[in-house]
Image 1 (cartoon, rainbow, N blue to C red):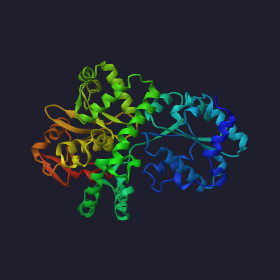
Image 2 (tube, helix red, strand yellow; image 1 turned 180 degrees about the horizontal axis):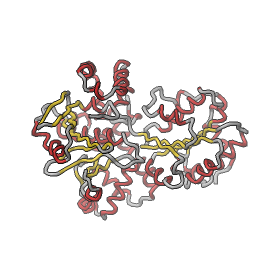
Image 3 (cartoon, helix red, strand yellow; image 1 turned 90 degrees about the horizontal axis):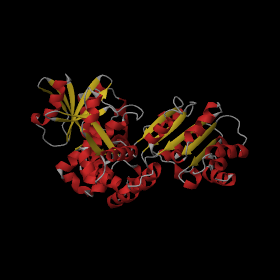
Image 4 (cartoon, rainbow, N blue to C red; image 1 turned 135 degrees about the vertical axis):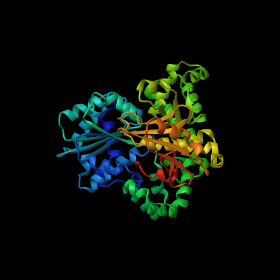
Length: 468
């Protein structure tokens, strides 16, 4: 049990704005992520706000930025409190949330709504029941909670907080965000303008001219993004420091803090071996029985551990597209490491991968996968697939009743014969337009009566969504 005195000491230490009236620059990042405007609007809604996603993707920074905005909007400092449960001593007390609010009430007899930020909430047992109890009593409290294991939060709140919580998912930086963080002012303006353009203008001659103006900067930044990925803590650091930190510290914390503690995993070695297997077969189809034989474990263990890796946002599992959900579930999956920096760190490729056409091709395919998967909300079913018959198609994106076939060809020369999987899928499902993501080609072609849009991958990744 945590004493009230200990809770008070922690509240005073963490909520220094009660005295200063402002948030320290050390806790603020000048750059605000694309998701921030939505979160800022949510502060004025009653619903609980959940910020969830991968480790070290800026959830805590987002909380400090929101607190900063509330203070700027005139909310009294004592009506805003933050508490982190990253310290196990503070999360073991089942009634800790109630105790925090009671202590705060004793310290400040607050009039008006309170804004309560609870960081790393997944470490508190039965946290959703406590938050729900305050929410349902219609107390004037706006809860903002965060957690590294987003899907675990969804699982634990699926019943108790239904209709009471809005989730916002943070992922590693998209390439567009990476460019806005690292680019000069002109490039930043171009990327921001692009996100507001309608699809018709994106395919125009005028846009192609603009792209040519920025393409060298975009290609340079994309090479960096391939090597170091989108986890902000790695930005602007030396390559050897970045990859050492990703492999030894980041992945280690995910395994031994997040997954091992949350799921009480006893055979952590098998989990690690599975992850390294995925890194070495990145983007290939996976047969769970063969993986089980190789790791000397049951197929059910493979499936369970893959679920853990997906929950930790280390891996994307892409199912085969079929109109029959049962066939999709039974077919082999494609497995991708979710961040190219982590993949490169684990495999030890270094800058050499940029000169290896086969390796860089699979890495770019994985980046495209992460980009498309991250555009959906994790509370909805998956809508990114691959397809294979005689030939294979890299991705199929399902948007409502529309199917968008996407082929990744990160090479200097693309022949019509390289697109057999794309064209076969389009014939089978009567799709009239498709996308080929290229190294540099930027044009529209008619092939076998089908409209094929060739788009440089580093341009495609700048927008959240694409329409044909």
